Image (cartoon, rainbow, N blue to C red):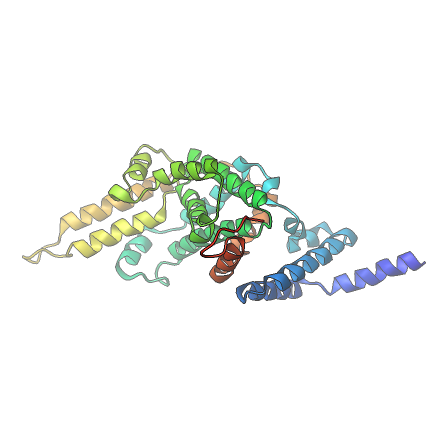
Length: 313
């Protein structure tokens, strides 16, 4: 029958859309974004999603669908509860945090050697990717009201991250919302006021006093902001010699280092008991899908050109 032949023809075309080709197409979309061709990138991305949706409809193998993560491309951040998102972010953070060995942070403070601090490097890369991922989800929204909905969503997620003592993801999202391409846009007053409150916790003035106080009052499980741990260790290393003038060991330096890493070890003793939510984890896609810095600025400036105030679309 005519209808049946059309379906079979579609299935034949869909069978060619395997993992490698799909990744190649998505890489090309990313290159288009970085080169500034936003219109072509968006058109191609829409076509890829259409093809994936068609494959989802005709393919009855749930195992294959899971491996391709097709359904996650249809999902939106707004589809999930903020509390659940915070919990799943925390599980991913905790898994990486628990693998960090104390010698790695000490080596990093002295050498900044990625090869000798592999677990620490993966943890910091995860932080950066999460931040860029959050920025991208906001900027890829075409309408101002949708961008604001996403900002509000991330603020709600941060609220839950604070409750469960995940300062690492908290700061990753905060750095996204406070990044220049997003901060320069025009937001409603309640959003800007709300962000000021959240920024207060990680205020760098007075040597992060508010954050240090909150951390001191926190019981495990907890995931601290690793950047401050590395900063403290670096300051101790640079500001103190290993040996005293008489050639004896500088135990004051060692004691300062011990206090910093001992606090980190204290938080590694606690574990989170959240249940893994596979659909949300798949939706994150390891936070690999984000725009490059240049593309973010181009989108930001298309919304609000430099030197002028253009109403957001």
